[in-house]
Image (spheres, rainbow, N blue to C red):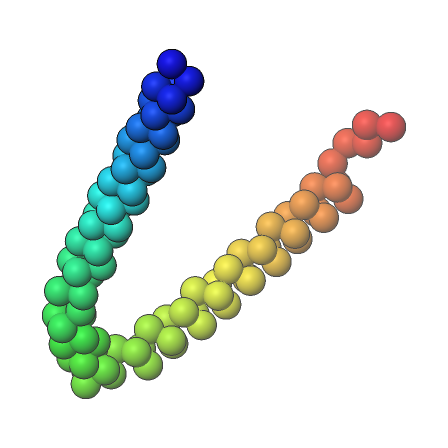
Length: 94
């Protein structure tokens, strides 16, 4: 009887290990498939990058980024100015 119980425990342990291994294999296959999909799109992305660089788009985007930041700073300064004006001219709630 004791041998049967020990054998049953060993079988259950082996089944659990096989299931864990199966799960890891499936996860690895899924990850590999995702990586292969990303790699397949890489040549197209590299070609697009090359065309953008040849068109000078990178420089224009950097300039636009600077303009957007400058506008953001101006907007923030304007908002601060409005808040200061409201505080100085608005009613006092003290």
